[in-house]
Structure formats: structure tokens, C-alpha cells
Length: 401
Image (cartoon, rainbow, N blue to C red):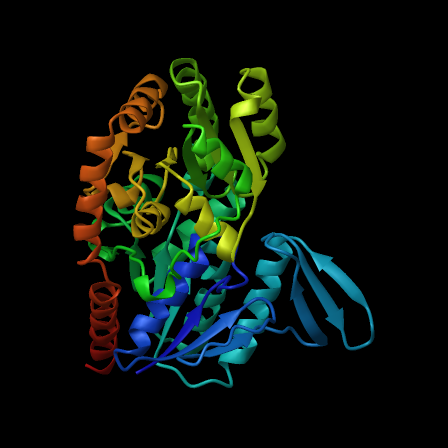
């Protein structure tokens, strides 16, 4: 079975969980006799041996370079020496045309496309080759817009693609309900396949924590609350800061470590100062590798207060490093992750109560850590990969019937 997979990022050149989920799902599928070619919108070295990774290069373009971790910064170098920077919408159009041209020369049985950035490319292939397309929805536009309608162009792309798709995969029941609510897609067209984590990909803590300043504070009985993620309206960081104000009033020796970058970066720094907790909130930007791992290792508690989180891998990753979590009830991971405390994203007072409760109750924290350890023994991408392969087979059998 040959699958053409369309995606926007893969580690180590990813800006968040989407690239991680794509990578680990693809690896699990490859172990299940699925032959994958993954088409990206940029060129980079990924050192992947379980599938072919190809850059979608439009005619006349010599090289496509992703700038840092930003989704909306791509540098095109043309054969005639010209250089252009493309925004996210121009990039999606270029990707669509390039993938459609590539598909004419490739052999595959089915197309599997991740999120709206690749959906139009999948539609073009379906129109030209009449092959089944599976759309994998990791978030809808209303998620990314923090519960609002969002960009009408993106909404139009999502709606059109979902109407034309053979099957839609949603990463949670929460996401399935959002698809039905926003685009009136029949429920029987949507399959829920949960994300997971590959624990073999998570490196162990190596000692000598990178956050030396925080280590000194912990030696003086400070508690550390960590959040890791994009600093966008979707992630609910403003509510976390309002809760942090109440926590600091009750437990002054509490530090909030915010790991990530995004368009709310300056806004959140300003809000921390305005709330009078600037000395208790540390922003360290986007981190990879040891610094990323150590942000969990230093933590007494992980909090994910997302307004609308289709799934959310970070509480599972925090659990792997032995850190208990508080997550919003509006997160898809809350449907499958039981060993944590849950709170409505908007309930700032209850969020603060739960943070204080876990930081001040060592016994409760230890119980959650043990429950997390037990629960993670059952976590694997294999179940998800088996379900998706069955979807492929169902469509291929239907096509040959």
C-alpha cells in the first residue's frame, strides 16, 4: 500500500505538536507495511529512514528555506538568482501547484493530508487522479482563533475540502464536534483517531538542569509551574496569568516558567507586569533539546489552560518526565488522559485553587505521578496506526469493488 502524505512540518524543523504527531504516526504506519512518501513545503535534513521525505518545489525554484520556526516565513531561491519571501497563504498556493505537478509523476494509492495548509493540494490530486483522500484534522480555524470564527479564507478551504473528502480523521471527539458544528459535515464521515506519544523518542533527563537560576530558587523552597506551547490566543495563557496572580498572592514563592513563542509574546509579558507578577513569570522563548526537556524536569506542576485544544501532547510528555498536570476540559487529551486534574479554561479561580492544591499537597502530587506512570505503560501509536490503515483498506477495497 502506497500513501502520499501531505504535511507542513516534521521534527526537528517543527514549530509545535503537529510535526511531532505527523512524524510519530508516519513511523507507526511504516511499521504496519504502509509505504509512505511525505511531501513538505520546504527543504531540510530530517534523517528519516522509514519513509521518503520530499520538498514540493514549484517550477523555476532552486531552493525553499524555512525561516526559524515561523509558519509564515519561507524564502524561495529561483534558478535565475531571484529571492522571494512568501507569506503563509502564498506558500499554501505554491505548495498546492507543486504537489499537483509532482503527483502526476508519482505512483500511490491514497492521499493523506494534514490540516488546511495541505487540503487544497489533496483536492487537486483527487480531481486529476480520482484517488481517495483522507483529511487529518489536528485543529479547525475556530480552535486557532480561540473560539471565534477566524480567517474566512481558511474556513472556506476547510469546509470545501471536508465536503469533498472521502474520510475525515479528527484527533478527538472535541474536534469532531467542532467540524460538525462549524461545517455541518455528516458525523458518519468523521473518524476519531487519538494522538499519542512515542516514548522511545523522548530522551531521558541528563542532570545538570539548564535553568540554573530556577534550581537556586528551588533550593530556597520555591515551586515551579511550567507551560510549554505556542503563545497564541488558542492556548489560554492570559487566563493562566490571571490565575498566577492569585497563586502568587497565596504562595509568593511560586515561579511560572513559560516556554514558547508566538504572536502573544509581548502582550503576555506586558500583562505579567500589569498584574504585578512580573518577577514571578519567566519567558524563555521557544526551546528544543535539553532546554525543552529541562523545562519539564524543573517543574513541580505542568499547566495547559487551552481555550480550545484539539488534542494536546504536552501533558503526556510532562507525564513521561514525572510531572503532574492540570489541563483544560476543552482539550482533546482530557478524553483519554485520566491521571491529571481538569478545569474549565475560563474558571481562573478554580485553576488557581487547583494549582495551589497540587503545589501544597505533596501526597496528592505523588499519587498523580504514580498514576501517570501506570497510565503511560498503555500509551502507543500502534492502535491509531492500525485504525488508520483499516481506513485506507476500506477505501481501496471500495475503489476496486
